[in-house]
Amino acid sequence: MGPNDSPSPARRREPAVIETERLLLRPLTRDDVDHMVTLHADPEVTRFVPTFTRAQAYARLAEIEGQWAERGHGLCAVELKETGEFIGRCGLNHWDVFDEVEAGWTFRRSSWGRGYATEAARACVEWGFRRLDAPYFTAMIHPANTPSERVAQRLGFTPLREDHFLGHDVLVHARYRPGHEKR
Image: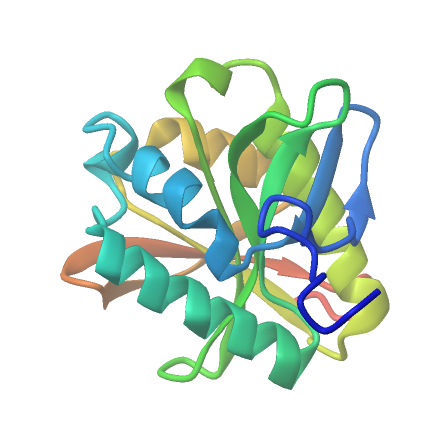
């Protein structure tokens, strides 16, 4: 293979770091910019998360790549195992402002109501507890986002505090590492 024979962007996919019964999760990269723009263009999806221009999505994906390189964790593309279809993003994101790791999830509207968010987030949290020394992970949820609230409850997250983040009031929930429950 010569110096100009590098794989095409479509073939330069990161390997899955997490696999569930129905899903493959792999680190998000700048090659996912079209997926991110499409995901964040749906007004129903972005009721509680920001919209992105292409340039903003590309910059955010560069930050995510940096977090994977620096910390060994970050946000993942979530794909259906059977078809490879991108259905959302999920993963662990370190927020310096809180010095906490958040478990976060955002999915395409066409995938809502099928248990994918719960399945992906559960796998991310379990993976995170095996790989990181964090005593807990947070989930920051807009008070009106009842579907995400239900996902967090199914995963064992409990209320931690109210806060303000990215221009919104949020309810911060915590899922404690077994044996480190809040006392």
